[in-house]
Length: 434
RNA sequence: GGAGGGAUGGCAGAGCGGACGAAUGCACUGGUCUUGAAAACCAGCGUGGUGAAAGCCACCGAGGGUUCGAAUCCCUCUCCCUCCGCCA
Image (cartoon, rainbow, N blue to C red; front, top):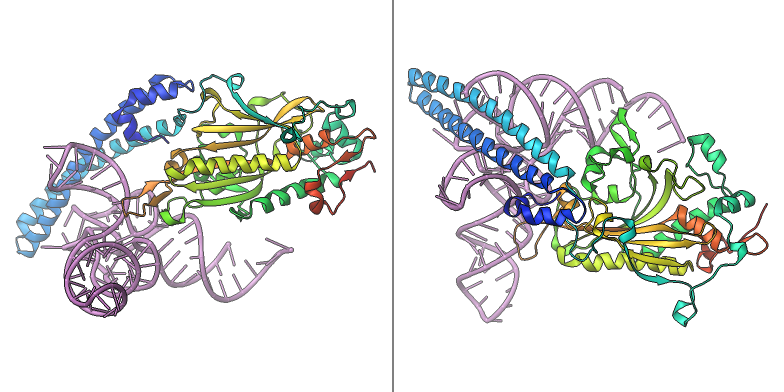
């Protein structure tokens, strides 16, 4: 959530900032109006409440003094005020709920540094990397044998079985087998080990409560995107960001503990409701994929460095895997609702000739922390402040799998995998047909 | 799934219808004392809402109820502990 005080004190500034991401000014104005109504009702209720309380004290005093007549008269008066108070309280409650619902739907204020723009076409490419670039080699070109899409390679080598995945769970649920399944396992272990120096490894639950998805901003606005188990009021997590952000929900952390960093590999579930019919082949867009996530709670001062650390780590993995990739600075209009600034990493997949988003590294300022009520007590003893949250994928394995298989395809149809995975693959870096 | 016990401030822990936002201890902060430190002593020390401010209001796991008045009584739920059952 945005800070309601900010909307109260300077609604136009908030409206101007949100306009960069396409939010109509009327939405901000509406929140400001609901807030005025709510506060008026609250004041009325509290005044009544205060009177009931002081009358009640007088009842006690009168009774103690032995004046039963006065006590009962005061009690009558208090009872009648209490009835009024209940009515006022209900009205204030409804008004407060209206403010909160409206606030939950407002996206975060974008960073000043996020470039202007309306959509994906306006994102700014900030750099590109390819193997050998540092030694002055030119950007790679790809041989014909690398121009085969991974779904064909996967089927031919018997390492990806989309058809049987569909039999089990419907389309866009991949099933990996043999060396393909092992490759996936290797990637996760490789990445978790790489982050172990500074990020505590977590294995969170795969399902989460409504409240948990609300904290990150995935609910209430994007409920169509998530799988829900209504009977148990649980949702399948769309990313490890969801459980990790709520690890310290409702807590006040000592400043000295920050930054607190976590890494986790989880399955990620997405309904892809708005994308029906798009990218349906292979692993381009699937309902379930594994991903290693990096996450940190920070003070506001630490947030930038923590954001850059996650970006550097995600890039470092891509470099270790020898993949050709680019870094995009997302424009205000393409930013996720909770994010203030995001860098996307896209790996080039030569077989399908596309740049595939394999990581999204975001700074959420205090937007998620306010929803989750995660604060820290400053070392100088001041009152608690909201933390900042940052996170990023490092990395999303389905698309990395696709990119590795296409990039590593050799003239004889086998696939050569990067040396960095050797220890995790038992030294078998070549996948050949069975 | 069944039976019983519990949930109170950063932690421990009292309170079980009226002056309780809450005893006490520990921790923490400031001070006195000391060459310095420890000890001792003194003082302070929860969060949020609202208000220009004084203040007022809310919060004792969550939600509802009884009452003039609820941390305290009643109901429902959640979580934790013990035992039984079941289970990987």
